[in-house]
Structure formats: C-alpha cells, structure tokens
Image (cartoon, rainbow, N blue to C red; front, side):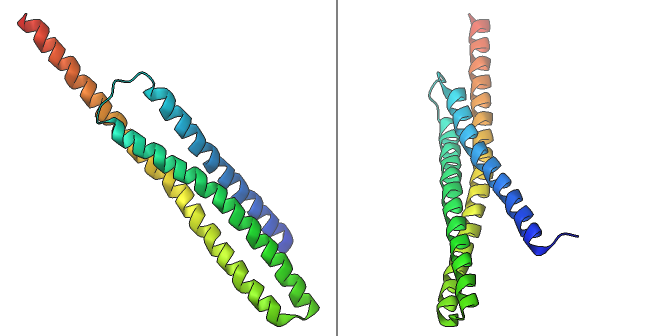
Length: 149
C-alpha cells in the first residue's frame, strides 16, 4: 500500500505527463495543418481550418498558463503548511484562499487546454471535409465540361 506522499507524487507525475502530451499535440496539430495547407488554392473551406489553428493556439497558451497556475499553487501550498506549522493561522488562512484560487485557475486552464485541442480537431476535420467536397465538385465539373466538348 502506498502512503499519501507517494500517491500525491504519482498523481502529479501522471498529470504532468498528460499536460505535456496535450501541449505537444497542440503544437503538432498547428504544424500539421500549416504543412497540409501550403499551396492549397484559397477557398472558404480554409475558414474552419483557420479556426482550428486558433483553437489549438488557445490550447497551447492554456497549457502554459496551467503550468504557471500549478507552480503558484504548489508554492502557496508549501508556504501555507509552513505557516500552519509555525502557528501563524491567520496568515495561513490567507494563503489557503490564494492556494485555492490558483488551484481553481489550474483546473480551468486545463479544461481550456483539453477542449481547445478537441475543438480544433473538429474544425480541422470539418474544413478538410469541405475541401474534399469542393475538390470533388470541381473535378466533377471538369469531367462534365470535357464530355460536352
């Protein structure tokens, strides 16, 4: 059976890995969509792909803000426990409120990070589907024109 410290350490390690994966996925998604749209003829189907890139950028920024909020929460938590240990309870209560605020911010930015990544994927696939549909319509139009000639 694991003690509390080991459980907290393991949980934080898992969360850190998950945040790193999401952060990397957002950056990779932006790079992939840029690569895939180089040389593509302009069309209205690029609008959802642009929205996807914005969602992924928001996800990336949220990941950075999440990391900062988590670091601040840990610093507050350490100071809070030191103050409680020293018997300075009034100051400890103030730090507890600050800790809870940073912890809440970390949770919110994590949700933005996750949903930004997923929303970007939906926009990207929608834009890609529209591009394929547009290309198919253009190809169909050229085939029809060739048969008439």
